Image 1 (cartoon, one colour):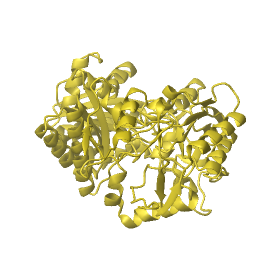
Image 2 (cartoon, helix red, strand yellow):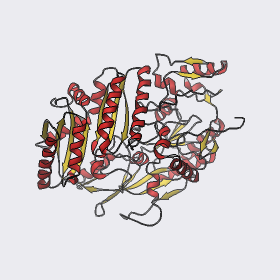
Image 3 (cartoon, one colour):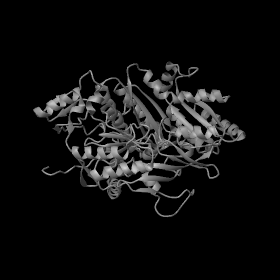
Image 4 (cartoon, helix red, strand yellow):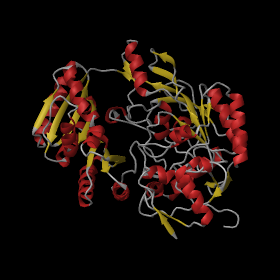
Length: 557
């Protein structure tokens, strides 16, 4: 067996993920560790002379070779995907149905860009073709061609995923770029809802409502640039979740979905509630594009209320969480729109980065958004001040103006960029887990001890009101990347052991599918696979994501 390390002149993630695309057939098997969710940057291959020649050729130009036709498992069955000649035929048909310039893209650099993410460290592949669509009919026609030739299909929106959701398939795949489907189709002010295409960004929705003087907003607020389709696929949430919940609540009244055979369905009407049949809308929320492609959605809006911002600092996370539990359980808990935890390391990083007007004491901190009428905000603020003081807060600061509130909240927004800037030359692996709120202090403390024991720097921020936190773990090289991978694995296992989840809002994708059976149980995962098989028997919708890997049986093996 020969061990090959990616050369220093190329980024290790790029070398790990190189997937040849034309010509000679190659079969390499990566030997992965069972105790890591992300492969090591050093890989072992069982390789003959031909395979070695192809591998080294790939390092010089990955466009010169082709992966063998890969079989994939769906619900216990085996899927044969399109051959190279079938993919070419499919691309030719795509060019006929979408003849506009730039609608069908096969340029190698573009294919790689759509298949890889600089924010993800999971195995990836370039797509065979990228198709830029504008309408539901466009998507349906593309999917019909994919179904005809058995070509895997992956939807792409804002490209903000952290768990490899839009990575290409090694057998070859079609990437459907929905970012051009970004129109708000209808705003029903009287009904408090809005219809839009799935490539619309949530920030643009709220900006449009503000520009038109409509005192409402869409409260789900994940990372900047996230689109409605991706938010539905991952079952997202954000800082507002403590008050408004997640995508799996009632914020999506209906969806227009293109199924794996190209059929278009609408999950329900626009009424605020319905007891007619299954809630098929929620079937697609959190399915990560493995059951169909969402092209339009009706979003429920909510009134925009006056909001104030406050900050409190504590000796440790345990005291901070105890204060939050008392506040949320009290009579003014309904006035809390957001309550965010920023740990001492991240506060220090924010200070050093110089991105905020003034420095803060380096302590574990809570940032609050309090909303309601003027009187209710005053009463809630007084109750919060008393509660945080009771639980050891050394500093409580209330923004006196909208400008000051914006500056104070910016401290939380700058967490990631400040953490990376705190350690020059580093990169950050961002991951999230969620546990019952009472378990959060234990989980944070254990994670910090784990990070310290292996010499890694990390910032921790969290939506502390619902037990969800993010670790921003820094690393410099391949060796540290492998250590980070192991730390993330232990963090996830620790969260699940506390009756939590491997992901509160990022989704499963490639990075966390190995934990799903442990978290949900084999019976639940088997039910998910059966649903997938019933809807997508060819397993062409975003294969390799969400569902834990099964042993793949092929002829002669």
